[in-house]
Image (cartoon, rainbow, N blue to C red):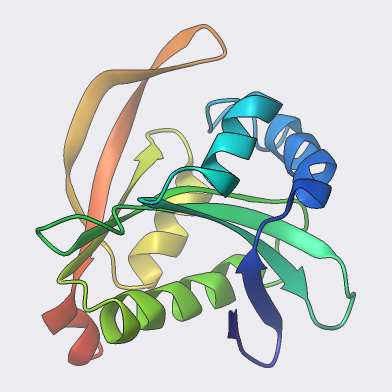
Length: 168
């Protein structure tokens, strides 16, 4: 579906689900994302027309290194949400490369006006990555999500097409 020299991103298949569930529940990821059941992932893969469930593959390793959910494909306001990202191989640039590909796809192929996401307040690593990729903090929603039994505050962040086009 999408690719560059380092990764390619393709639609997730049911065969990817053991990897997805391991990555999602990994101790480095689970404090930052809500956990889904197998059935919720399957519904996202096969039934939800508004959502893309995608797997990130390393070209060098030839294995999955992460996954993401993109929501809002049918949004009448041309606002696409990067709903979830999780990587099993951290610190190797895969997340940064995924963002480059998803921003290009959202603004050039999907004609989005806005690409947005939320990030858990204490996930400094992800927040810094998103900022370096051109996303701006729009605000903080206090205790807006429940993760592992705790209410967490989340930052809303976005990048607009105009900012993307101007290389900001």
